[in-house]
Every structure is written in C-alpha cells, then in structure tokens.
Image (cartoon, rainbow, N blue to C red; front, top):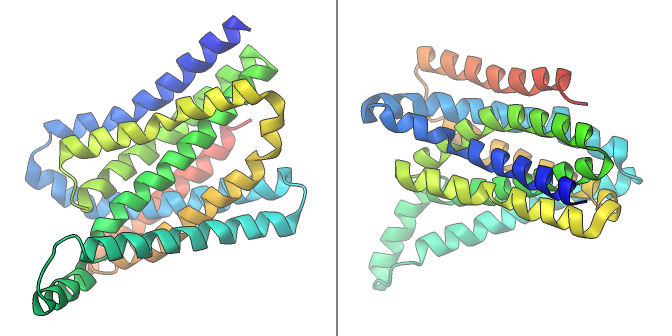
Amino acid sequence: MSTVYLYTFASVSIVSIVSLVGVVTLSMKERLLHKMLFVLVSVAAGAMFGDALIHLIPESFREGGSAAATSLSILLGIVSFFVLEKFLRWKHVHTVENSVEEEMHVEALAHESAPVAPLGHLVLVSDGMHNLIDGVIIGSSYLISIEVGIATTIAIVLHEIPQEISDFGILLHAGFSKTKAILMNFLSALTAIVGAGIALIIGGSISALLPMIAAFAAGSFLYIAGSDLVPEIHKTSDPKRSLIQFVAILSGIGIMFLLLFVEL
C-alpha cells in the first residue's frame, strides 16, 4: 500500500506542476502576450466545449446508473455557476462604498465589463473542481494497479497542458497579473492532491460518485464557455481576427478530440 501512496502523490504532484507552464510566457514581451490573449481565450472556449461534450458528458452517461440523475447533475453545474457568477458580479459592484450617485455610476461601469473580473474566479473554481476529479481518478486508478495508474496519469497530463495554457490566458484576460495568474492557477491545481487523498482514504466507494461529479464539472464548463468566453470572443469584429478566433476554437475542440486516442 505504501507503494501505491508513493506513486499516487508523485503523479498528482506532476499534474499540479503542469499548471506552471504559464511560467514560460513570463519571458514573452507584454505586447506580444496581450496580442495572444484573444487566441488563447478562443482556444479555451473550444477546449471547454470539447472537454464537456467529448469527454465528461459521454463518460458520465456511460458510467452513471441513471440518465436522469446525470442530466440533473449537468444542469446543477450550469445553475450553480450561474448563481456563483451572480454573486461575484454583485460583490464586484459593491466592493467600494460610494454615495448613491457614485454607486450607480460604478454599477453602470461594472455592467459594461462584468464578464471580465468574475470570469477569472469562475475559471479558478471550475478548474479546481476539475483537478479534484483528476486527483480522484488517479488515486482510484492506482488502487487498481500501478500500471493503470501510470497510464491514467500520462493521459491526464496530456489533457492538462493545453487546458492550463488556456486557463492562464483567461486569467490574464480577466485582469490578473502574470505572477498572480501563475500562482492562482497553481493553487487551483493543488486540489488534485486533495482528490487523490480522498480516493485513497475512501477507496473504491468513491468511484460511484465520479460520474455525477464529472457531469457537474461538464455543466460548469458549458456555462463558462457559453456565457462568458463566447461573448468575449464576439467583442472582436475584425474579419481577420474573427477567422483566427474560429480556427482557434476548432483547435481547442480538435485537441480534446485527439485525446480520445490516448485515453484508456
């Protein structure tokens, strides 16, 4: 059992370190980095749609015992993140104490840029939950065998690299500094260690909950991609940039599709 613990926590540590791929972008010039943001946001939208519709939802229906329960879990993910974003928007508007006239002015400005600040926090919560699921999956896989655990870890790392790059771009777009975006992304990734610990402690019984958790995560991805990222993408109307965005969205979807061939 000690070997299982060693391999499990080594694997989730590697998955967490993958979140630091954003460090590579620190060497980029600020101007070039901001030019890339509209592409990264587009890739992220495609990756989130693809992850939800190609991986998480089919897996949830395949492994879940009830189609109705799986569907409700997806809807619960959508509704939960709608409520969370409402709270974040409300908090964003009311963080500064002003007179009535000033507060109305702040609220009007916040309405224009509302998708920006809350978006970063939504992505962190959603990505943290996704990493928690990854940790549970890795821990459960090692309980089966070392070989299955290693294969699962490789598949998840391949999955995480493009996702973490996209998440880093979204956090920058949401207003985080480069250093803070890397730090917050890394802290979110550490939930994989928590998930692995839960799997090892509870054992095989946790596997019964995975389909519903994955369905909830899929709902959150669909909400963020459709409600926050797509409206941001539509702010660009230039034909050339729009074409680049379209290709970037297809690239994000394509990456998620290609991962089908490395999953077990």
